[in-house]
Image (cartoon, rainbow, N blue to C red; front, side, top):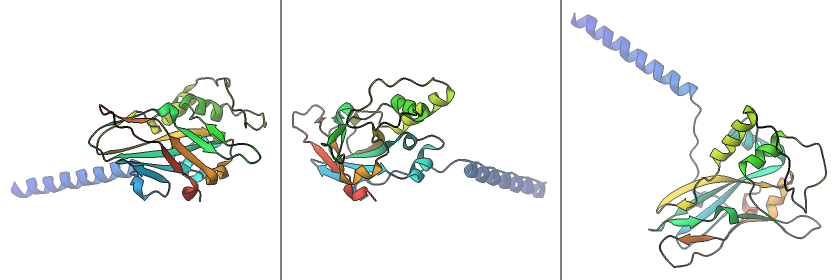
Length: 219
């Protein structure tokens, strides 16, 4: 009886190990976000470090977003990483973040981030009009039908974005911001991300303007 019980125990243990290995093999690996300080494009002062990781190759978009991606619509996705080393939380105004780019033959353009729904429209609607979108940005573009594919893509974009405007003390967070560069990904070599509106919570001490030069990451 003891021998039979021991054999049963070994069989169950082997089955559990095999099932666990199969489960891990079928689950996609989750890549950890890098240390913001390790990225070449970053700015740091007053105990806050902000880094930018622009996606400029189709391969990176495919790995991150899958079948549909902002790249298909001429939109750049920039992963912004925030590390707050202070004892106080920091409030961030997401709507004031801008991408400043140099357009050849024109003055510098300040681009506001697109909402996930706008990105989904521009990718899935696939407009045939080849007219350049600069210097005047497209406003009020017609919505594509909100079918299941659109909903899933918009949800994926939203999930990848920065969904909170509060940076916790001694914490690191990150999320994607989307900017329409009309497929001119080379503009990133002469562009910067501006983060102008931040404030310590419950503290009148000002938190100064952040400016992240993207040139070091444009390769």
